Length: 134
Ligand SMILES: [Zn+2]
Image (cartoon, rainbow, N blue to C red; front, side, top):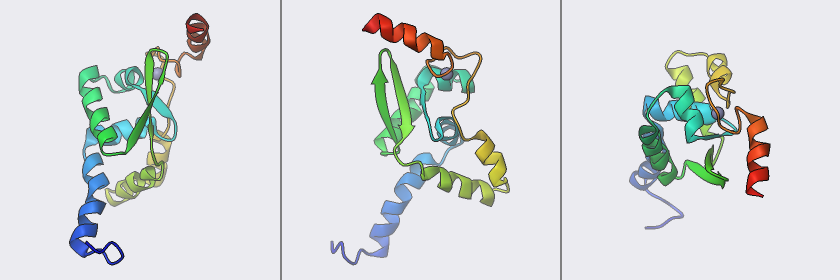
């Protein structure tokens, strides 16, 4: 394979990788919730109301596709987008589907959820937790 002049089949296959990995409503929902910040499984669980195992399954697939990376902090694992420009792709797809960019940008972000007990939603807890660990 000559990488200086890659063929269309080769390039097409590579380009379809991230597109295929995010192409489901569940995974788009997860990406919107993580946005430009980060989120733990419990945060996604509280926001989406899905079983944790089901969410983890999607997180694993997105991580395997090199779309997400994770970080452990105490007993929490936080997921973030490896490249936030993926959100531009999501927004472009939203526009094609008839949504406005404003609709999407209003949803893209880690929002504080009153029914979630993760460190991001209850920032007071994190200091207590980190004191306990230290
Ligand atoms: Zn939360």
